[in-house]
Structures are given as structure tokens and as C-alpha cells.
Length: 434
Image 1 (spheres, helix red, strand yellow):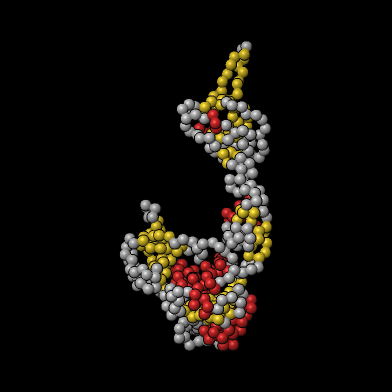
Image 2 (image 1 turned 180 degrees about the horizontal axis):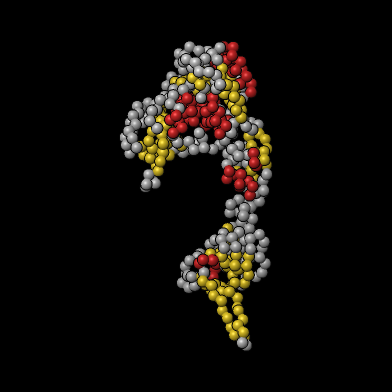
């Protein structure tokens, strides 16, 4: 396990008094290690969990060559680009059971979507492409009906069209999902299609969280002058719950050394990660930073960003510590930018971060190079299909309502300057996160 000092020594340009956002994530990538424990859970309990090992497909999907649509199956070698093809229908293949019989040249089988392709047939013409003919002949005074005949126009098909091949989705003995993948609704459906009921997953990450400060009121306490109700506790709880963590809610801890020490010791004993809000600003006259230093190996940063400049990170015992600023918006921004990716790695996830989207700014944005800014924005779609974005207005780090109105963060990068109307900017969308 590397110390804070050794990690810092490996990072080029590391400056705790002016740390870039990219260097924060680089530092955390060295600090964080995935949890080692795993378990097996039923498929209904697996949503949002992380696979702890590859899942090998026990069967091929599809298990047979089959039809991709309702139509007529035949040997595509008979197709000609210059002339229509006339075929006699000699049977019907239904989904769920194999059709037995011999299909000769000039013949075809009516087939339903998902039905196994009869032996020797490799192409399906959709039923709406064909012209049907029923020929009759006179026998004495009655009409005897001959088999149905279809005509396929020239040039509408190629050999192999509308056939799903055995194993084209998954082959038996090959990985269906890989270690580190997040189990999404689509992944659960895939597992069910293979007949798999239980899945190997990394155990849930245990994260302890508490707010600090004598000025913080818990819900139910009467208002008092100079005090504010604790919103951070509930936003962080929501963010951690959305992430699939096991949350250890420790409430509000007052600025008293004994109480803070007890809280940190308890959190380190119960959790893989500890998150606090408040008490990490440079020069603050409180006990939180002192207690972090006493109990752990901790770095205190001034990050070149807005909002959310102060942040602490390190370890207390075996637990990773994230000391976030106290302002509500700064807490959420630092969580999204730094803590969430780190926790995903701790959970065992190998998923890449969602890509930033490009949107055109509908307003002028003032920005000084030398820091990364995360402005709350509302992204909409223009008539031409492109994305556009405007801010939610007041960008103060205490304006919590702006996070409710926003659907993403406008990311103005470290070296970027002012933005004019129509300029493209990067956007980090909130969907499924906040």
C-alpha cells in the first residue's frame, strides 16, 4: 500500500496548493484498490453490482440457425439478379420445434420468426416481398388446388439474408460478460437468456458518511441564529445509494476533538471509505483537519477548480478518506468529478467514465485559464438535432436549487478561457447519477 508521499512523488507537476483536476484523478487512481471479497447473488439482486469474474456462456445464442422474420426459407443459391425466382411452398416451420422434411430445388418452406432453419436452407424472403400464386387444374368437373407458389422479384435479396446464425450473439464456452462489468438491465436480460440464475459479484462497498460543524442542524432541530440545516447528508446519501453502496449514515459530528476522534475511528473500523463534508478549508479554526492528521495519512489540497477548491484525501487505517468542502454544490461537484470514479474503481468496476457531450453555449461564459470550472447547465436539443446549453443562472456554491434545475455540468477545462455564444463546450450529464 503506497503512502501519500510516495504517490505524490510519482506524479509530475504535483502541487497540493494548486492541484489540477486531472492530477486529482491521477492521484486517486494510485491510491484506490478494488475490494477483494465477492459473493453470489440471485439475478433479481444483481442490478448495479459489479461482476467479480467472467461469466462463461453455457450455451450458444442462438442455439440454431433461425429466421429473423416471418417469410419463406429457401436455398439462396437459386437467386438471380436478372430474373424472378418461383418457388413452391412445401410446408411450414413454426418457432419452438424443428421442421423435418426435404426441400428440393424450386421449393421453399413458410417460416415464422425464430423458427429453426430447415436443413439445407440459408435465406429467408420476408412475406411482404413475394407475390403469391395458387394454380388450379380441372379434374372432371371439380377444381383441384395445387400447392401455393411464391414469386420473389429479382434483386431484392442476397444469399443468407434474414438468417440468424448459430452463436452469432454468444458462443458456448466464451465469455458472455467480463469481470469488472456493471450489471445493467440489459446484462440481466442477457444472463437470463443463458439460463443463469446466480451471478458472482464484488461485495457491496461500505461507505461511512458524516457532516461536521457546530453550525449544522439536523432535521427536527429548531432553527437558531447562524445555523443551517444539513443538506449534504442527504445528497451524499442519495449519490451513494444510486451508486449501489452500503451507506453507513453517521449524521452530524460536532467540532469537539473527542467526538471527531470517535467518529473517525468508528468509520475506519466499519467502512471501506469515509466521506466527510466541511472542515477542510485552509486556515479553518476547527478540529477536523487536526484529527485527520492525527489518525491517518492524509493530504490537504487546494484544487484549481470552481466550485470545490478545498479537499482532503488519504487513509485512516484501511479506509480511504475523502474530506469534501462544506458548501452543498461543491460537495456534489467534487463527488461527481473525483469521488464517484474512485468509488467505482473500489467496487471493482472497469467501466470507462461516460463521455462528455458537446453542446453549443447559448450565452457568454466568463472563465479564467488556470482552473477547471463546473457550471450548472440545462441541455436541450435544437431543431437541427444538435445539443445546446445554458447555465441555470447564479453559480454560487451555496445555490442548491441550481442543481435541481440543471441536467448536467458545463465543464470548462483548465486551460480554457472565455466562451462566447455558439462556442462548443463539454457537458457532463446527470442522467442516472443525481
